[in-house]
Structure formats: C-alpha cells, structure tokens
Figure 1 (tube, one colour):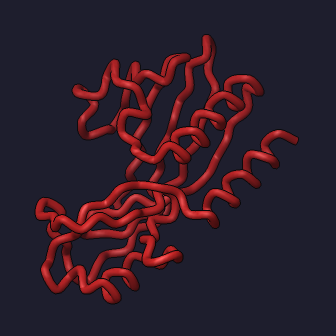
Figure 2: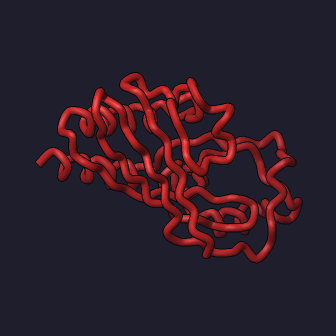
Amino acid sequence: MEELIQEYLLDKDNNIIDTKNVIYDKNLLGLNYFDFADDLTLIKILKDIFKKVREKRKIFITTYRCDNEKNMRLFELEIIPLNNGILKLIHKLIKETNRSIELDLEKRSSELFYLCAWCNRIKVGDNFIEIDDAVNKLKMLEYNYLPKFSHCMCEECKEKLLNEMEDFDK
C-alpha cells in the first residue's frame, strides 16, 4: 500500500490556507473546507468538532472511508489545534483494498443514491449497506458506471461520532 497523507491548514473560519500532498491544492486555497460537502448533518458535526478542538486545544482523531474507482480506502483524520484558531487536518490512508472490477467514475446515470460520508455505505431503502453489496443488489457494475451520489451520514456513524465527541469532552 502506497503511503498517502494529505494535510490541510484551516483558518479560524475554516478557509483553506495551505495544503500538503493534496492533488488539487492550487485550486483549494482560500476556499472554505465545507464547500465540498453537501450533507448538512455532516457539516454541522464537523463544525462542532472543529469548534471543540479549537476551544479545548486538544487533538481529535476519527476514521472514515473514501473510495475511488480502483480501491476501497479507510482513512484516519487527525484534527490538531494550532495558534490563532488554525486547525491542521491530517488525512492518512490506513487501509486499502483493490476492487475486483474498476468503476468508471466519469459516467453517471440519472439515479441518485445516498452515501454515508463516514463509512461509505449506500442507503438502500431504510438501511445502509456496504458498497460491494449495494453494487450487486442494485446491479451498478452491469453498466460499469455509477449512479449519482449525495453524501449524508448514517445513524450508526452519527452515533459513533457523537460518542467520540462525548469522550472528547471528558
């Protein structure tokens, strides 16, 4: 597994002021970190975490999934408070599994699915299931492209993160 560590520095208003090892870093400077998230629950929870990290001046660590067309990837996110309300975010790849069939992420259907931004499971009916199960159940790979996705947060991940935040408050 290739080591992948991406870093962001955010100002007190969560604007990106510097990056390291981020592919599109020249286009990101000055943009707000939350410009890249659609789910209001996810944004609220992250803003709450950022606020607490700044107030307590204490490091917060959690994990999340971020897959691509070739791999399923688990990342660790470390949020470090610096001076003047600046946060350092370190996204570190900790596990990577190759997909048996590569997905074509450029082609999209008109169908919209909800993807948990933390665990990367897909909402099918009232449940969230692993992406490989969803791919089979929804026959996504029969067309070798994915439907449109909107990020959200499943109840299980929301509960886990709220517990991590509660432990962080202690």
